[in-house]
Length: 119
Length: 108
Image 1 (tube, each protein chain N blue to C red):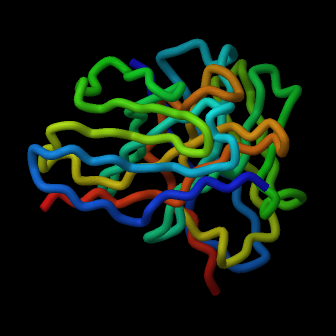
Image 2 (tube, each protein chain N blue to C red):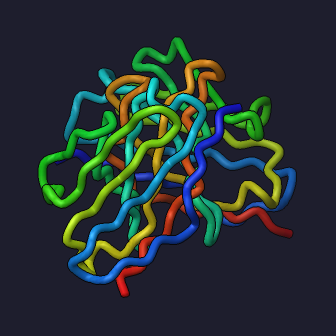
């Protein structure tokens, strides 16, 4: 059974940092593109970043470029999102999601982890 | 950057047909995916690559994509179809995944 389990969310002050993790199981993690997608309270879905199977390609939404870093450890079947210089507008549920290719749909999603940026 | 435009809400009576549109510049040249999201749950893909349906998704769900509009069609709508629906593409010009703003489907 494919499972994606996010962790690392919580309350952080503006300007602070947080590292999200996504533990993958039930499939060959190294064969898939992986993404982070977020959803602010009461709002729609917003793609944050994605990373190629071998980590050689990474893309980011403009609003997080230079502040967030996506990475993966295929040996540990894990996806990460290092978030620095956090802002109130980064408050959201963060989902990790799996894709076959860069243009494909997200066929599996985690349950999400809530990040709250507030003083 | 590429923009996908969805109507904020669509209402339909049970048993009728709901059509949710997703507008974008020459979207017909892109692959469109559709997700259903119910409150408190992660999104679930209901249509991928314009018109393919994952296993477990009822045949009542179908999709089309041409010109500047992609459409998700839900036939014989049931109360359980009430949810938010999002379209999504990959924009190769910007190397960005793009989601539409979402459409809340209300079953009257």
